[in-house]
Amino acid sequence: MTTADPSTPHRPYERYVALGDSQTEGLGDGDDTVGLRGWADRFAEQLAAHSPELTYANLAVRGRLAGQVRAEQLGPALALRPDLATVMAGVNDVLRPKFDVDEVAGHLEAMFAALTAQGARVATVTFPDPARLTPLARPLSPRVAALNDRVRRAALRHGVAVAEADRHPVVSDPRLWSPDRLHAAPIGHQRIAAAFAHALDLPGSDDSWTHPLPAAEPAGSAGRGRAVGAELRWAATFLGPWLRRRLTGRSSGDGHTAKRPLLLPVRTDQA
Image 1 (cartoon, rainbow, N blue to C red):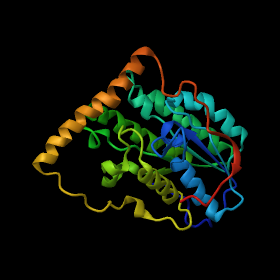
Image 2: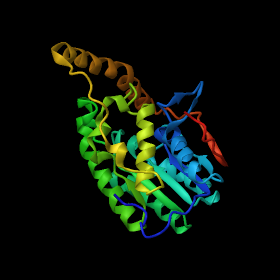
Image 3: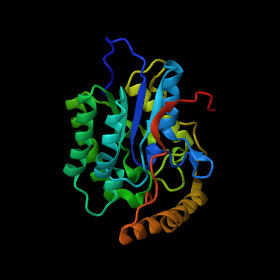
Image 4: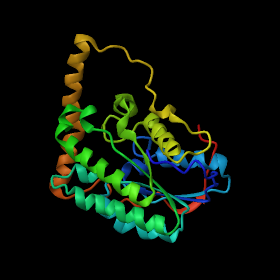
């Protein structure tokens, strides 16, 4: 894991900007009726507890590919002159039939380079093996492993902190994930926020986000039968509609814009 230099005293951040796709937007933590919270909001609240003057913008939009994040969000992010930025993108690319790890990694590295060159502290994340969440996703495992390797190498070149989410078994606990298995549940978003805080060595952060949840009841033979049924229901409910959008050229982000395009003060009274 890449972290801040421990010999350098932590400086309060004043302007935090989050770039990314649906995970950073907050899908799985709230909804479009009551509002989305998500790991970036939770992380901003943690930052604001130590930096009361912090302002925060979230430019993420669901469904965006890494190249779209770069094209649509990097310019506005640079214009906000953040002293801290997070970049999380690439999963939507992994899910596409034609995946080019060099292209995706190039977009991510370009964002790392531009943000750090302007003086921002930047943090990113590695992604868990999707086969640990659903066996149907096993063909995607080599793609995710290749992307994680490229993320680590690019981060090292640009001094970017990395939350190593893929290296800990807890990230595959289904209780951390929403029913679609693509977006974190509220407790999963909480863990992601803690992972970023730990990667940046923020005051009060530690590795507790890597600890397992309390043991669940064993599934048993009847439970295994329910698990097979759950796989089939997941494929019908989530995989089928996702494939139809890909075939018709539509995206879950069509018609959506950034939920928080401006730097605004952060509330710290969330539960």
